[in-house]
Amino acid sequence: MSDSDESGGDGSGRRTKVARLIDEYGFESLGPELERRWTADGDDRLSLRALADYFNRQLLAERLADAGMQPLDGETENIYRLLTDDDVGSADRTRTRRRLERNAVDVEGLRSDFVTYQAIRSYLKGDRGAEHATDDRPRTVVETEHIQRLRGRATTVTEERLDQLRNGGHVQIGEFRVFAEISVFCEDCGTRYEIEELLERGGCECSE
Image (tube, rainbow, N blue to C red; front, side, top):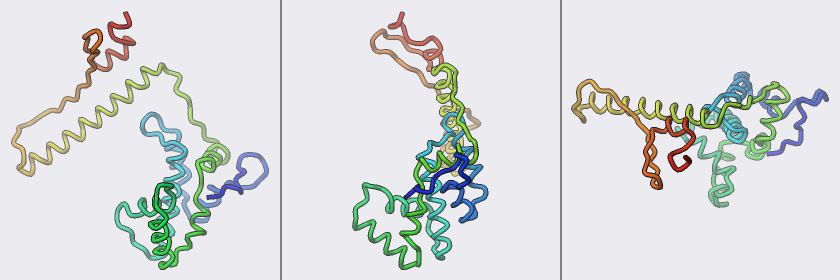
């Protein structure tokens, strides 16, 4: 996982490792996707480390496809984990490498193509000129929005699951609405607030 050829954005004319690999593997749409995921707001944003893992899994999937392998759902992610995770035992890693080599996958070449988060950063900032804008709003406002999005997702998932159960005859219920409420109870002062109210006022009665 060497990034020794990393040098984008310094005016030297040399390309970053990520840019080179995108061309070599034919991943034309992956560059914009990496930028979009890095510059997204809130919970939709992925860290540089997460993006590096995502990029490497795309490389692995392409190598497996070229070798004629057809991994099951989730198998590509597991192979990547077995090849890279420090917690994986040597026996499991060796078995994985041998399986890939039997299918004509150049494991050493693949691992040398894997990139680090520094390589992703060099590509995004140097080649694409991307910047992640810092949210200068109060932290409580930002977190309130995060919580509201999570609550909205929980409501949607609950509605979908309940509707499936009803349609399958597992639950009897008429037309329904789902309410997801989050409240906080302070055991010191005995007050209870909806989460938005607590964050808006900056604390409970203990702070007064």
